[in-house]
Each structure stands twice: as structure tokens, then as C-alpha cells.
Length: 207
Image (cartoon, rainbow, N blue to C red; front, side, top):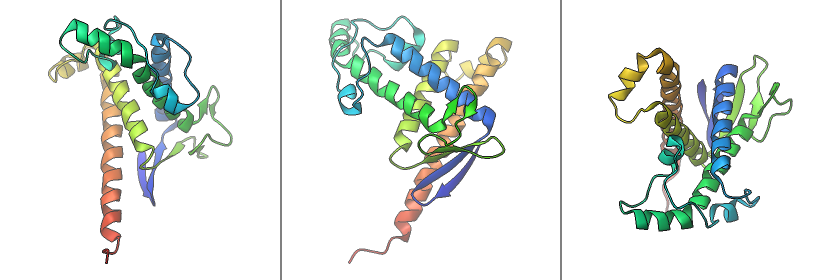
């Protein structure tokens, strides 16, 4: 992965394998969220994020439980809050994941010929994505959600768990993916904030 600062954002160049892996992860996240949804996603993002509804209890699936934890210590308060807000939270995370897959622009046969949205494919198979300050939060939320879901799946609850899981053959690959997502997340935030600070420094002082 390469990050190239651009006026008003960042150009990210993913290797073909990196883009395919991220697309698969985001698609799996979208499927997981959709399986826990109580209804169809409203085509209007605003209304979808405000939809009221939800279950009464913490999800049994550990990944969903990590993504939608109890808001309060008391069961009664947590259940009431979940019944009102959970569906809206699901919709927001689902919208974010779908946005990332659309920006990557990968189909069954690889990058689409014309790209999708701000995404494009280079001749060497790399996938190029343009990320702006406005779309950065969506990428950050999705990368964070992926890391939370992965951590829940393999039992990565404490910092010390990482070393143990890293040395287990059955979880080593997943831990490396978890670390890669962290590196992407940190790089995007660092470069974008650096460019934002640089842009502010270049602005002439107000009279």
C-alpha cells in the first residue's frame, strides 16, 4: 500500500491482493450486519441512520456483541436503549461497509473497467482510491469495525492476547490481517491530519 497526499485528500494505491482482501472483509462485514438487521436498508442514508428499532439482548455472535455492546451496566436500561437505537447503528455501519466496497470497485473479475466512484485500477493491477477529509471518517469507522469483529472472532481481548494468538498456527494469519488493518488505519489518519495541518499553515492570516 502506498499513500500519496493530494490537494484536498489522499490517493491510496492498494496492491491487487490488498484491495481484494479488504473488499472481501468489508463485504463479509456487510453480510454480518445485514443478517442482524430487522429490515431492508432505507435508500436514504439520513433516514436509514435514524431508523428506530432493535433487539432486547446482547447479540450471541461475539463479533456483533463487540460491535454493539451494552450501553449501560443494568440489563433493563441496556435493553431499552438497544430497542430504540440498535437498528440505526446497524444501518450506519452497513452503509459505511458498502461505501468502502464501492470505492474499491472490485467485482468478481477484479477492478471494474471504468472504476466505481473515486476508485480506479492501474495497469499493473493495483487499485487506486481517492480519500477526502469528508470520506475519511467512513473509512476509519469501517476499518475499526473490521478490527473489532476480527478481535472478537479470535478472542483478542487484551494486549497480551496478541502474542499468544500470533504463535498459534490457526490464528497467526488472522492476527497479521488485524495488524495490517491497524497500519492502514493509522497511516490514513496520520497523513490526512498532516496534510490538513500543512494546509492550514499555508493559508494567509485573516485580516
